[in-house]
Structure formats: structure tokens, C-alpha cells
Image (cartoon, rainbow, N blue to C red; front, top):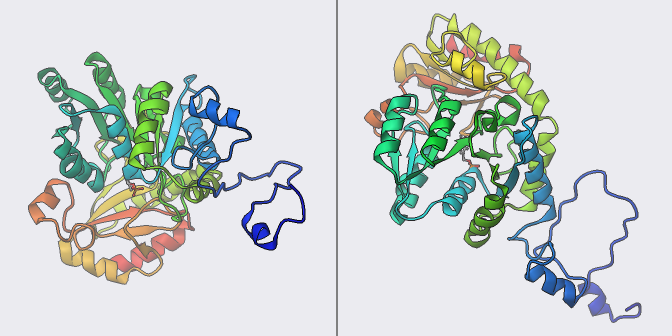
Length: 398
Ligand SMILES: *Cc1c(COP(=O)(O)O)cnc(C)c1O
């Protein structure tokens, strides 16, 4: 239909697209639904005869390009196929994976020092639906094997390596082998490393989840997450269905921001790692510092394991101040150049004193059990000039 339509209809109707060449950069498809060319196409898509977009909660072209890119990064050089499903956050990735994988009566086996939100999700939410979580030290491989033997209802072995706040690592290859032996899925949260530094598929892990909010985006401007799996069929049916029906889908704008960040991932991770290594070596010699937790230091208990699993040691570290809580608060008060923020993986250096900030309301015994001592400072080392970061830490320690 052409002109003249009435003015009010002109206001309402979409116009035909005018593009004659392809956009150089991925467009943001800001649309909640997709229109069909014909009734026949609509029927074919609804009955699954033809692939096609229907409704934004089920899938969106912007989001799918980003998901495929991250899945390709996670399987890069390994000669395997993998697919990715982007969701609304890192937490959505974990909850959607559990919804798509487990059922009432199944159990999860994991470690005590998980990301705090993950522990709460497993115990406070998932637990109410009949999926119990067992916590153990996943570095004790004999202990893990005994638990797998004693509990045939364990269906998922879930881990983070390295993990907050001490950068403790677990042996993914050994855990993946135990998973295969006992018919248990293995899943790794690879948020701290990104596929540039560590590819859990290389060690035989089945599923990888990310909070793309952190290093993958890198610029601190979107919340999103992804599930990457070698079992493409599972991802595109069970996991996709869980996302679609629980409504944990990502939105195209946040996915696009991740896409923008991914272009400099390798440059950023190189610099995060270089800066962190420099600062860790310097801090380790500092008279006011008791201990530095960084995988790149030969003094770290998991240095050898980290060297096997990671290409570089990334931007995350923590250190213990002599002088406990008071020293921690005094240090934080003096920080000027670095940012006091409860996130990680951004381009700028972020500092957290868990005892007085994120863990203020957690009983001291519980906090200590998780390695969060009074004088512990966590740093997400940024990509600024390392001299500026060091100067700020130095004057704050002074
Ligand atoms: C931040 C984070 C999460 C949760 O991600 P959100 O995007 O905040 O939901 C999960 N795991 C790790 C290791 C994280 O750092």
C-alpha cells in the first residue's frame, strides 16, 4: 500500500527498511516480536519446520550473535563444537542451567568459597525445590570421589577456579574425569578468567557459565550472563526452554555492550595480568603487607596448578594488611586514584575491603571460615598506567 494513507496511520505504521548494504557493526534489534512474511512462514516457524525468530523472550538476532561469539571463544582451538545461550545476568546463567539440568531429588556438589550469590541461590532458592547442595573441599579429590560414590543422586559438580578471596584453584581435569566416571555433569564459572586466559572445555568440563558483566564486557556498563555447553542439543532444547519459560532472557542492548567489550578482550586481559603481576610482586615485599594472594606468585599455594590451567593469571588478587580491621579501614579512607566499588573486571582498578563493606552483616566466624579476614583487601586490577595504581596503594599504605 502506498501514499496517501491517512496521517494518523502514517504515524503508527513501521516504514520499509532503506538499507542497501550491510551494517559494518552489529545492529541492536530493539523489537519485542518479529513479523512473518506470510501465514505459511508463520505456521512453519511455529511448528518448527523452519527456524525463525518469533518473540523477543525466545531469541533475538543481536543476542544470538554475541552468544555464538563467546561460545566460539570457549571452544577456540579445541576442535569441538559448543553453543551459547545469553541470559539476563551471571546469576540467571546459573539458575537457568540448574532449571534446565536438574530435577527434584538431584544434588549439587560444590565448594564453600563460591561467589556469594551462587551459595545463596543454591541454599536459599534451589534448595526449596528439592535440589540439595553439598559443600566440600573440591581440592580433596579422594573426598570428592567418596562423596560421589556415597551419593548417587549428585548430578552436578559445580566449581569456580580461581575463587574469591584467596584465589584458590581446583583441578578441573581431575574433577571432569571424576564427573565422567560417576555420570555427573561438571560446570565451571569462568568469570574471573574469560576464555582468553582459561578454557575449561580443554580440561573436559561440560558446561561453562559467565557473568559477562565482569571481564567479558569489561566496561562496567551492562549486566548479563551466558551458559556455554558442548551438548548443543541440551542447550538448544532444555536450557533454552528454561530460559524462555523462566523469563531469564538477555536484552539486546546489554548484549550489544558485551559485544563491544569483547573486541578488546585480549588486550585488556594482557594488561590486567601484567599490572596485577607487577603489583603483587611489589606488595609481597611491602612491610605493611602480611600476605598477597595472586596466582602468578610462586608463593601462592596453587601457583603450579594455575600455571597448568591458565595462560596468564588475570586481574584479580587480594592481600592481607598487618593491623587487621583498623588498618583495613584506614587504608580504604586514603585511597584516591582507585575506585571503591563492589564489582570486578572493569577497565579501572576497583578496591574492596570485604570486612567493612560487602561482608559487614555476615557474622565474623562465617566470614573467617570463607577466608575473609579483617585486614583483607580485594583488588580488581585495572588497565591504567600501573605506576598510578602503585602510587595510590603506596600512599594509602603509608
Ligand atoms: C558477579 C559474579 C557472578 C554473578 O553475576 P551477575 O552478572 O552479577 O549476576 C557470578 N559468579 C562470579 C564469579 C561473579 O564474579
